[in-house]
Length: 171
Image (cartoon, rainbow, N blue to C red; front, side, top):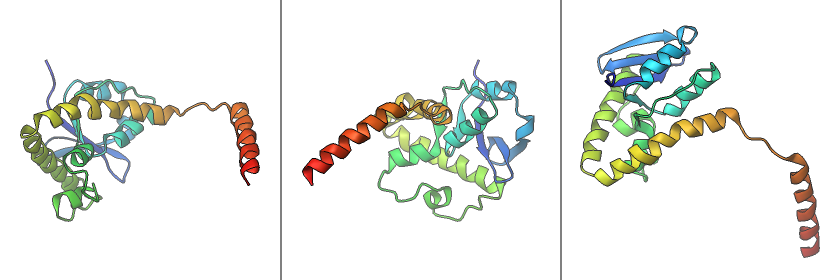
């Protein structure tokens, strides 16, 4: 059986902020986060605003994210209105949100999540795209960014020389 829906974010103090309702939250110091903690979160639905930042923090600690049921309010905001200039919490809600104040951040993310669930209910195909493509790829992107890529510098040097010759011939 799936665990409950949990909101997870980080705060400027370097803590994870975990909430199961709009009016309550718990601060979890990064040093206290274990694989068991991450697995418990991953067993339910996870809501975040910029989930990739949370996943980067887990990866930096050597913790593996196995969750698949996620809702990133930042990504959802873009999907629902790609013309919106800013995807910051306060801008999306039309009010000031003090990002240093965990209670305000938690309440804002829960409110935005609720509004997005209602909006997606009216656009089931877009919601399907979010759940089946956009949200799942967040974890993959975080892992790729964390691990980085290996470059073949010898090949790139040779390519650079080839382009220099072609550019020189055009000049």
